[in-house]
Length: 277
Image (cartoon, rainbow, N blue to C red; front, side, top):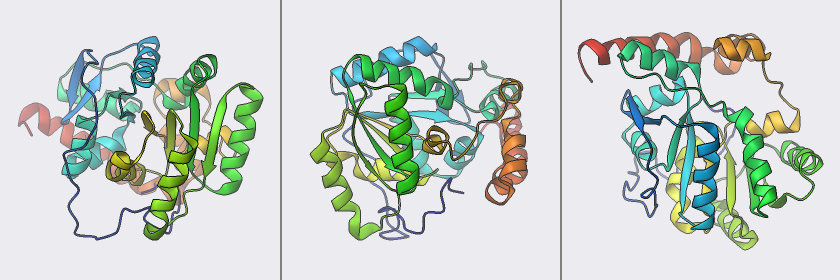
């Protein structure tokens, strides 16, 4: 289920039966790091400062591509979807974000990747963008959320160049206009907050038309930056039970993801260990 109740497809439902071209003009070569395969998705075994260095290299060399944070929902969706698994395969970097990845790795019998919680290390990324005068574009959420996020970011990072912001409520007929608006602003980095898997598919379908260097599918990050949503207490995040907090605070939105998705993830991880894929 999407983080946002987007009524339109953001160019994702032009045809329900359409096939996404799996050959994309992305440049994820030249980024070397150790990975571990968790349910068919390569997760980087990498430290946080290395992530920032890879991002800076990608921007400097204009190595067009995307960097993702993988959680249990992402593993479940990629397990069921060829295009999403290919999306992660072509990423510059897949970071272990959710505790579900840690559990799936443990149950699968592979090396356990250290979690890199996107909503936490994003601020180090923003600091790097400000320091190097790189520009940022925000796509997604409502206008109010986006504008408040911009205001809060400017308060935290006065010199951060945010070249534009658009809401995520656009339909397939408006997609070319959205792409044109982003390209006119010439950002180095784009945060795409359309909810999973809409944001991933939007990047995948449209990256060849976009001129920015690095794209991040960021889920509800703009909600957190704007103050619309609150992060769970740090102790819950540390213990890997943030999902319980979200289940209690947003039951109508996430109950399927956790109450149905978590057992499915456990089953798939155990199957991968004892029977293979």
